[in-house]
Amino acid sequence: MKLKIATWNINCGMNAKDEIIPLNLIYDLIWVYDFDVLLLQEIVTSTKFQVITPQQISRNTQLKYFTEYELSSSHQLKDSFMGLSILSKHPLELDEFFELNNPNFRLEVDGRTMMSHKKGFLFAQIKKFDLYLGTGHCPSFHYFKKNDVEYKDIIYRPLEKKFIDLLREHERIIVGGDFNTSNIMTVMPDISRLYTQVIHGITYPKESHQTDYIFLNNGLSALNSQIVEGEMDHYLCVAEVALKEERNDLAD
Image (cartoon, rainbow, N blue to C red; front, top):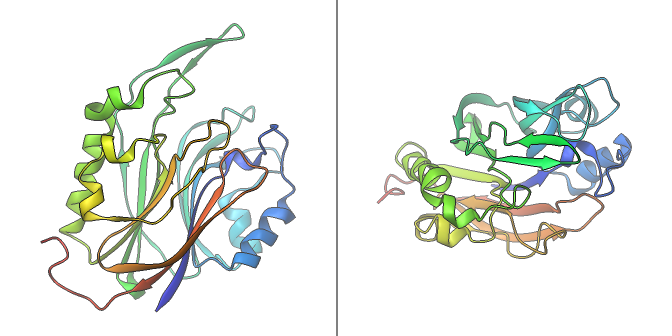
Protein backbone atom coordinates (compact mmCIF):
# COMPACT_ATOMS: atom_id res chain seq x y z
CA MET A 1 0.00 0.00 0.00
CA LYS A 2 1.36 3.40 -1.03
CA LEU A 3 0.39 6.81 0.35
CA LYS A 4 1.34 10.32 -0.70
CA ILE A 5 2.02 12.54 2.32
CA ALA A 6 2.73 16.28 2.46
CA THR A 7 3.61 18.81 5.13
CA TRP A 8 3.19 22.53 4.64
CA ASN A 9 3.44 25.67 6.73
CA ILE A 10 0.72 27.41 4.76
CA ASN A 11 1.28 30.87 6.29
CA CYS A 12 -2.44 31.56 6.80
CA GLY A 13 -3.02 31.17 3.06
CA MET A 14 -0.77 34.11 2.21
CA ASN A 15 2.30 34.33 0.01
CA ALA A 16 5.72 35.65 0.98
CA LYS A 17 4.53 39.18 0.10
CA ASP A 18 1.62 38.87 2.58
CA GLU A 19 -0.93 38.68 -0.24
CA ILE A 20 -3.86 36.27 0.04
CA ILE A 21 -3.48 33.33 -2.34
CA PRO A 22 -6.68 32.64 -4.37
CA LEU A 23 -8.42 29.59 -2.92
CA ASN A 24 -8.75 27.83 -6.27
CA LEU A 25 -4.95 27.80 -6.70
CA ILE A 26 -4.55 25.90 -3.43
CA TYR A 27 -7.38 23.52 -4.32
CA ASP A 28 -5.81 22.87 -7.73
CA LEU A 29 -2.44 22.09 -6.17
CA ILE A 30 -4.02 19.58 -3.78
CA TRP A 31 -5.89 17.90 -6.63
CA VAL A 32 -2.86 17.77 -8.93
CA TYR A 33 -0.60 16.15 -6.34
CA ASP A 34 -3.44 13.90 -5.16
CA PHE A 35 -2.32 13.75 -1.52
CA ASP A 36 -3.63 11.01 0.74
CA VAL A 37 -2.65 13.02 3.82
CA LEU A 38 -1.86 16.72 4.21
CA LEU A 39 -0.22 17.98 7.43
CA LEU A 40 -0.66 21.73 7.88
CA GLN A 41 0.80 24.39 10.13
CA GLU A 42 -0.28 28.04 10.41
CA ILE A 43 -3.65 27.14 8.89
CA VAL A 44 -6.44 29.60 9.65
CA THR A 45 -9.04 28.05 11.95
CA SER A 46 -11.46 30.98 12.27
CA THR A 47 -11.66 34.26 10.34
CA LYS A 48 -13.91 36.70 8.50
CA PHE A 49 -11.60 36.75 5.47
CA GLN A 50 -11.71 34.57 2.36
CA VAL A 51 -8.59 32.54 3.12
CA ILE A 52 -7.94 28.83 3.19
CA THR A 53 -9.24 26.79 6.15
CA PRO A 54 -9.44 23.04 6.83
CA GLN A 55 -13.21 23.15 6.32
CA GLN A 56 -12.81 24.67 2.84
CA ILE A 57 -10.15 22.14 1.85
CA SER A 58 -12.45 19.35 3.01
CA ARG A 59 -15.35 20.69 0.96
CA ASN A 60 -13.39 21.36 -2.22
CA THR A 61 -10.78 18.60 -2.51
CA GLN A 62 -10.39 14.84 -2.11
CA LEU A 63 -9.31 15.33 1.54
CA LYS A 64 -12.76 14.90 3.06
CA TYR A 65 -11.68 14.10 6.62
CA PHE A 66 -9.87 16.49 8.91
CA THR A 67 -9.04 17.38 12.46
CA GLU A 68 -7.73 20.73 13.65
CA TYR A 69 -6.36 22.42 16.75
CA GLU A 70 -6.43 26.19 17.29
CA LEU A 71 -3.20 27.53 18.76
CA SER A 72 -3.19 31.32 18.71
CA SER A 73 -4.25 34.55 17.06
CA SER A 74 -2.97 34.97 13.52
CA HIS A 75 0.14 37.07 12.97
CA GLN A 76 -1.08 37.76 9.42
CA LEU A 77 -4.81 38.43 9.68
CA LYS A 78 -6.63 40.71 12.10
CA ASP A 79 -9.31 39.10 14.29
CA SER A 80 -8.36 35.65 13.01
CA PHE A 81 -6.93 32.51 14.59
CA MET A 82 -4.60 29.81 13.32
CA GLY A 83 -3.31 26.41 14.30
CA LEU A 84 -2.67 22.88 13.05
CA SER A 85 -4.64 20.51 10.88
CA ILE A 86 -4.43 16.96 9.55
CA LEU A 87 -6.47 16.26 6.41
CA SER A 88 -6.97 12.83 4.86
CA LYS A 89 -8.80 10.86 2.17
CA HIS A 90 -9.49 8.28 4.86
CA PRO A 91 -11.42 8.57 8.14
CA LEU A 92 -9.42 10.09 11.00
CA GLU A 93 -9.68 9.67 14.73
CA LEU A 94 -8.32 12.54 16.82
CA ASP A 95 -5.91 11.32 19.45
CA GLU A 96 -4.15 14.13 21.31
CA PHE A 97 -2.39 17.49 21.34
CA PHE A 98 1.15 17.59 22.72
CA GLU A 99 1.96 21.09 23.97
CA LEU A 100 5.51 22.40 23.88
CA ASN A 101 6.98 24.67 26.52
CA ASN A 102 6.52 28.33 25.70
CA PRO A 103 9.87 30.17 26.01
CA ASN A 104 7.91 33.47 26.37
CA PHE A 105 9.93 35.39 23.80
CA ARG A 106 9.27 39.12 23.44
CA LEU A 107 10.26 41.45 20.62
CA GLU A 108 9.43 45.09 19.90
CA VAL A 109 8.37 45.56 16.26
CA ASP A 110 7.18 48.95 14.98
CA GLY A 111 6.00 50.00 18.42
CA ARG A 112 4.23 46.70 19.11
CA THR A 113 5.30 44.00 21.53
CA MET A 114 5.33 40.62 19.81
CA MET A 115 5.24 37.52 22.01
CA SER A 116 5.72 33.83 21.37
CA HIS A 117 2.49 31.83 21.34
CA LYS A 118 1.40 28.33 22.21
CA LYS A 119 3.03 25.66 20.00
CA GLY A 120 2.90 21.90 19.82
CA PHE A 121 1.95 18.81 17.83
CA LEU A 122 -1.47 17.45 16.88
CA PHE A 123 -1.88 13.68 16.50
CA ALA A 124 -4.56 11.54 14.85
CA GLN A 125 -4.96 8.00 13.53
CA ILE A 126 -6.09 6.33 10.34
CA LYS A 127 -7.19 3.06 11.89
CA LYS A 128 -7.75 1.48 8.48
CA PHE A 129 -3.96 1.38 7.99
CA ASP A 130 -2.90 1.32 11.64
CA LEU A 131 -1.23 4.65 10.81
CA TYR A 132 -0.43 7.31 13.42
CA LEU A 133 -0.04 10.87 12.10
CA GLY A 134 1.35 14.05 13.59
CA THR A 135 1.70 17.66 12.51
CA GLY A 136 3.37 20.37 14.53
CA HIS A 137 5.05 23.71 14.88
CA CYS A 138 7.96 24.72 17.11
CA PRO A 139 8.65 28.29 18.31
CA SER A 140 9.97 30.76 15.75
CA PHE A 141 13.52 31.27 16.98
CA HIS A 142 14.66 33.20 13.91
CA TYR A 143 11.82 35.73 14.22
CA PHE A 144 12.69 36.48 17.83
CA LYS A 145 16.43 36.45 17.02
CA LYS A 146 17.14 33.47 19.27
CA ASN A 147 19.50 30.52 18.83
CA ASP A 148 17.45 27.32 18.51
CA VAL A 149 20.28 25.11 19.79
CA GLU A 150 20.29 26.99 23.10
CA TYR A 151 16.69 25.85 23.63
CA LYS A 152 17.36 22.18 22.98
CA ASP A 153 16.59 21.09 26.53
CA ILE A 154 13.49 23.29 26.87
CA ILE A 155 11.82 22.61 23.53
CA TYR A 156 13.36 19.79 21.54
CA ARG A 157 14.31 17.16 24.11
CA PRO A 158 10.72 16.84 25.44
CA LEU A 159 9.54 16.58 21.83
CA GLU A 160 12.14 13.93 21.10
CA LYS A 161 10.99 11.97 24.15
CA LYS A 162 7.44 12.13 22.79
CA PHE A 163 8.65 10.72 19.45
CA ILE A 164 10.38 7.86 21.28
CA ASP A 165 7.29 7.14 23.37
CA LEU A 166 5.22 6.86 20.18
CA LEU A 167 7.41 3.98 19.01
CA ARG A 168 6.27 1.89 21.96
CA GLU A 169 2.61 2.45 21.12
CA HIS A 170 2.26 2.47 17.32
CA GLU A 171 3.41 0.29 14.42
CA ARG A 172 3.41 2.99 11.73
CA ILE A 173 4.16 6.67 12.41
CA ILE A 174 4.45 9.74 10.17
CA VAL A 175 5.17 13.14 11.69
CA GLY A 176 5.65 16.27 9.63
CA GLY A 177 5.94 19.89 10.53
CA ASP A 178 7.80 23.15 10.83
CA PHE A 179 10.44 22.39 13.46
CA ASN A 180 11.97 25.87 13.11
CA THR A 181 15.51 24.54 13.16
CA SER A 182 18.09 23.67 10.54
CA ASN A 183 20.01 21.78 13.24
CA ILE A 184 17.56 18.92 13.69
CA MET A 185 20.23 16.26 14.31
CA THR A 186 21.81 18.47 16.99
CA VAL A 187 18.66 19.37 18.90
CA MET A 188 17.04 15.91 18.47
CA PRO A 189 20.02 13.54 18.06
CA ASP A 190 18.14 10.28 18.71
CA ILE A 191 15.74 10.95 15.85
CA SER A 192 18.36 10.00 13.26
CA ARG A 193 18.63 6.43 14.52
CA LEU A 194 14.96 5.84 15.32
CA TYR A 195 13.22 7.59 12.41
CA THR A 196 13.90 8.16 8.72
CA GLN A 197 14.04 11.81 7.65
CA VAL A 198 12.80 11.96 4.04
CA ILE A 199 12.98 15.68 3.15
CA HIS A 200 16.39 17.18 2.35
CA GLY A 201 16.93 20.72 1.10
CA ILE A 202 15.90 24.32 1.61
CA THR A 203 12.26 24.60 2.69
CA TYR A 204 12.32 28.14 4.10
CA PRO A 205 13.82 30.26 1.31
CA LYS A 206 13.77 33.53 3.26
CA GLU A 207 16.61 32.23 5.43
CA SER A 208 17.91 29.63 2.92
CA HIS A 209 17.38 26.94 5.56
CA GLN A 210 15.54 23.71 6.02
CA THR A 211 13.02 23.98 8.85
CA ASP A 212 10.34 21.58 7.59
CA TYR A 213 10.66 17.81 7.92
CA ILE A 214 8.80 14.53 7.49
CA PHE A 215 9.80 11.63 9.75
CA LEU A 216 8.85 7.97 9.30
CA ASN A 217 9.36 5.11 11.70
CA ASN A 218 10.39 1.61 10.63
CA GLY A 219 6.82 0.63 9.83
CA LEU A 220 7.06 2.61 6.59
CA SER A 221 9.55 3.04 3.78
CA ALA A 222 10.15 6.17 1.73
CA LEU A 223 9.78 5.66 -2.03
CA ASN A 224 10.50 9.23 -3.16
CA SER A 225 10.23 12.82 -1.99
CA GLN A 226 10.32 16.35 -3.32
CA ILE A 227 10.29 19.98 -2.24
CA VAL A 228 7.80 21.99 -4.27
CA GLU A 229 8.84 25.61 -4.63
CA GLY A 230 6.17 28.30 -4.81
CA GLU A 231 5.01 31.71 -3.65
CA MET A 232 4.51 30.80 0.01
CA ASP A 233 7.19 31.60 2.57
CA HIS A 234 7.59 27.85 3.20
CA TYR A 235 7.84 25.32 0.41
CA LEU A 236 5.52 22.33 0.20
CA CYS A 237 7.22 19.04 1.20
CA VAL A 238 5.92 15.83 -0.38
CA ALA A 239 6.81 12.17 0.18
CA GLU A 240 5.45 8.92 -1.21
CA VAL A 241 5.65 6.12 1.35
CA ALA A 242 4.88 2.41 1.45
CA LEU A 243 3.33 0.65 4.42
CA LYS A 244 5.32 -2.35 5.59
CA GLU A 245 3.77 -5.47 7.05
CA GLU A 246 3.02 -5.16 10.75
CA ARG A 247 5.81 -6.10 13.11
CA ASN A 248 6.14 -6.20 16.87
CA ASP A 249 9.75 -5.08 17.19
CA LEU A 250 9.68 -1.54 15.81
CA ALA A 251 10.68 0.01 19.12
CA ASP A 252 13.59 -2.39 19.74
